[in-house]
Structures are given as C-alpha cells and as structure tokens.
Image (cartoon, rainbow, N blue to C red; front, side, top):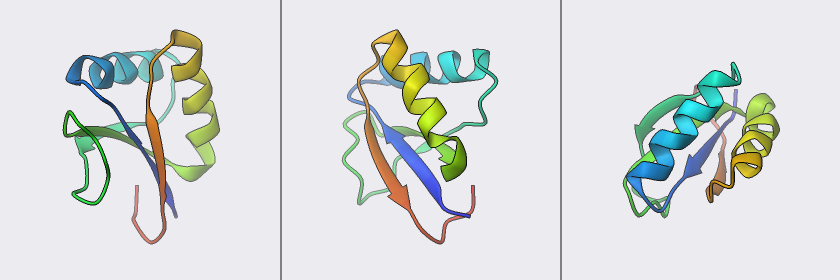
Amino acid sequence: MPIVIFTFETTHQAMWAEEVTQEAGLPVEVAPAPAHVDAKCGLSLRTPADHADRVSDALTREGIQFGRVEEEGIEA
C-alpha cells in the first residue's frame, strides 16, 4: 500500500503533528525523513495513503505547516 510522508521545518512541528494526529485517532508513525525528501528537522510522519487527507486536514486546522510526499511501494 502506498504511504504519504509528512515533513516539517522544525522538530517542534513534527512532535506537535504527532500529538494532533494521535488525538484524532489517525494512524501515523514518526520516522526519520528519507534522504530524498526535504525535511529540515529530519523527522517525518508516515501514514497509509488512504488516511493522508484526514491527516492533512487535522494539521491544517491546527496551523501546522508541512510538506507532503506520496511514496509508492513502501509499506506503512
């Protein structure tokens, strides 16, 4: 199943995003950002692609800035 990787400028944003998505009951995993993805803090959130829009909506509602990269062939 494809996944979506959410990236952040700061570690604070990444940890805040993890808290927001966990409180919303969304399946996310904090992981090191892949080398080919622009993530200034080095952390990312990974989620199955079918949950990505809900994660985006939750982060946007909280005012968290993020990047979004869709990956094929990576298991969540």
